[in-house]
Length: 111
Image 1 (cartoon, rainbow, N blue to C red):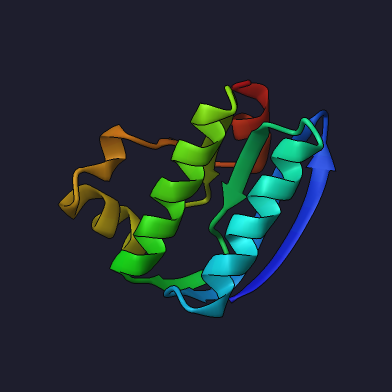
Image 2: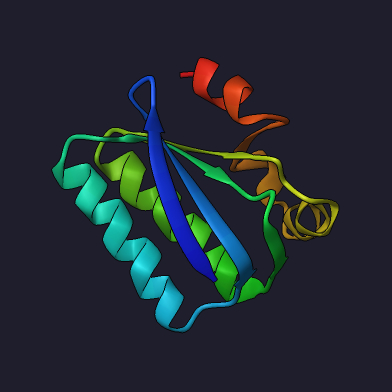
């Protein structure tokens, strides 16, 4: 997984690419979120449009990110969730935990 991020209207958009399966990339996402919180940037959108696959460890990363931001009084929202990941979220009942939007703009405007 590769991670890019940018800021738009005070919201940080994280754009992972590839497979989210844990390992070294889990540390990269964790570190990025903590860096953002230290900078006072607590509105985060994760754009999943370029994610090919996610396993249970990847779901754990998203849950950890959500928890980390909530503790900092922030929010994490998902956008462009692929059908494969939607299915995974539905099976695990996490669709009720994450706020999900069809586009980055929708997610940004929801803050």
